[in-house]
Amino acid sequence: MTLKFEKFSITAIFLVVVVLVIFFSSNSYAQDIIEKPNDIHLHMFYGQGCPHCGSLKLFLDSIKDKYSSLIIHEHEVYQNQQERELFERMSKDFNAPIEGVPTVFIDDRIFVGFSNAIGVSMENQIKRCLEINCSDPEYKRATSETTQLVGESSPSTDPEKKEIMQSLTIPIVIFAAAVDAINPCAFAVLIILMTAALAITDKKRALKFGLAFSASIYISYFLMGCGLFSALQVSGISHTFYSIVTILAVIVGLLNIKDYFWYGKGFLMEVPLSWRPTMKKILNSATTPFGAFIAGLAVSLFELPCTGGPYIVILGLLAREVTRSTGFFYLLLYNLVFISPLIILSLLIYKGLSTTAKLEEIRLRRIRLLHLIAGILMLIIATAMILSLMKGWV
Image (tube, rainbow, N blue to C red; front, side, top):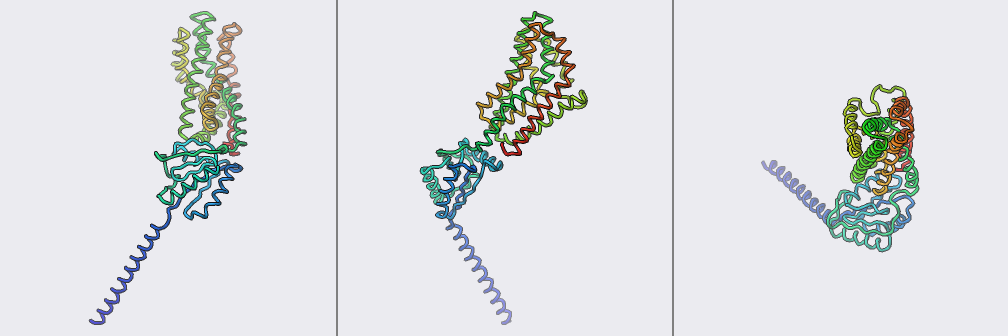
């Protein structure tokens, strides 16, 4: 009995000692956590070769040993697309425009550029975070306390790459507009309208029909383009959309070339056959230039399946590469090129240099060739866009 009691006593003492060790160890660990300074996350977005970025790096190197809890996250945005997308997302989360590089995020403070004054403000923010619980800005959103301090900075994208893409943008816009302009859909629609107009009025009034219709197409396509362009820029998915429309450009080009070799087989890059009677009925109902304008608004929706491909490709490019005001200018240019053949055909009919019957005959005779030209131009555009992705220009 005594032996059992002794064994029990030893076991109990051992368990008490283990519990006490665990208790005091836990308290000690908890105390260490409480006394350990908060981690301060600093996100620095910079570009390789940016002079202001170099100055900021030297500054951070000079102070980082003073703050053991300072964690510096470096994000190079000129060469690394993933870091660029993170920069765009964090700027969007903080409701802050991208002003340039370097840009630093610390808690709810944003510092753009670098100068001695910005360096002082940045270090004050680090000291502030030692006293309060600052969170990682990568997972933070704008609050009423969010502030942005802007100083001297460099462009947020590699100037050399930006220059290359800017030099390519206008030719690509014109090429894509040319693909749309020679599309047989637009020719067929105008010829139907002009035939109907000449049946009820003279050439001068028929010209007004043609010009009103062309103006309507111009306005409706421009407005649709502005809406999608703005939505892409606001959504922040412009790079993803650019990759998607690059694939679309290849598909549209190949389908047009298919229509040269196997016209009428499979998917046709024209208005669907089932839609054509309704579209023709709308066009024939136009009895005044104003009626032709209204008909143009309705018909523009019917034409989208065959003319929308190049337009969507260009919208993807512009949303990625240009500002909103510049983008609107390019859309004005694109649609001017797009409707120019419609205006030329209207003038040819008005001047008596051709008739709707002859133009329709030419269109039917050359329809395969038009598809081939459109397909080749579209593949040239696709090649330029693929090259821009491979070279990291976007």
